[in-house]
Amino acid sequence: MPKYLDFESFSGDEQYLNELKATQESNDTDKEEKDELQNWIDSVESRVINRKKDIYSNLTPFQAIQVARHIERPSTIDYINLLCGEDFFELHGDREFGDDKAIVGGIGKIGEYSVMLIGHQKGHDTEENINRNFGMAHPEGYRKAIRLMHMAEHFNLPIITFIDTPGAFPGIGAEERGQSNAIAESLAEMSEIRVPILCFVTGEGGSGGALALGVGDRIFMFEYSVYSVISAEGCAAILWNDPSKVEVAAGSLQLRAKNLLEAGIIDGILPEPLGAAHRDYRQAAEEIRKCIFNNLPCLKEISADELIIQRYKKFRAMGKFALQGEVNA
Image 1 (cartoon, rainbow, N blue to C red):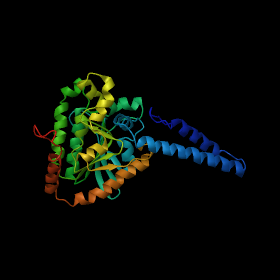
Image 2: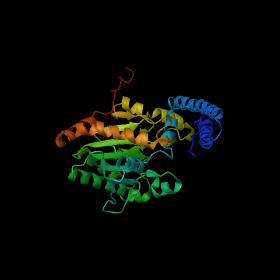
Image 3: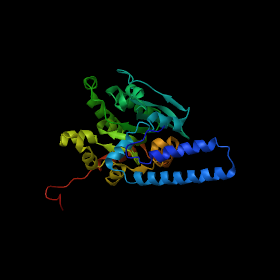
Image 4: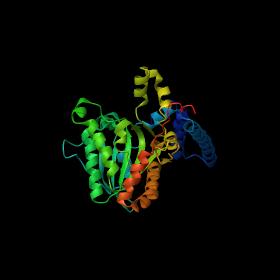
């Protein structure tokens, strides 16, 4: 049974629809009764679809955060399996401390392209989330990512990153092993990698832990993903010292895909299946596949030197400022 969010008021009808379909599959009654059952299924299904469309076209910023964090939302490994099938070989370890399971990476093949795939990895249940540290990487995770990026550069493999993390792990051990330096190093190294980089925000892109895999030539977000310098909860705690302000903070952070596209932070928005990506993994993965095929050919035509120059200009052009006295102009 799917896990429904509080605002998904179609949950009862959808469960009833599934029961009707199960009855239909096992029904051996006459044609008239089958037709009547089919008409009833069509009616309920239409109601569910219309309600989903209405809800998902009017999500509040905090509701979008809840969707982005959904425990059933496709993870990096889910996308890799759908994009590469058996043509993926995972690589482990940073060659300094250990293997961080919050970041996965390896060489794979998507269609005609051999690529290096790297991304944050969350779990689909409590046990898996604990094993993956809820997608919050340690320094060795980012150092593993850097190692794989240099390997990709050596073998002239384009890099695909998947961003889905609340942020880098803030524990004492992580700080002792140089968390901030690992993130800064990842940012610096990605800016100078001499192969094309495509970045996809697939779920929750939080703080520097997300940005550490986000310096790319093209950056895309799924429709209901979020990308922000801080979580809404962290923002509410710092600015108001009041957890009840979380929805106000979510609105102020402008963290949705449409906000970031308008601000020039990302290059495009990938549509999600009706009811979000966790309802149809294959359709979501197909959007990534199409995006890769639409963008890699032109990036591969650009020389390595020009690629770095364009990447530098891209990030230098981000952001806006106003001089004092011009704020209200």
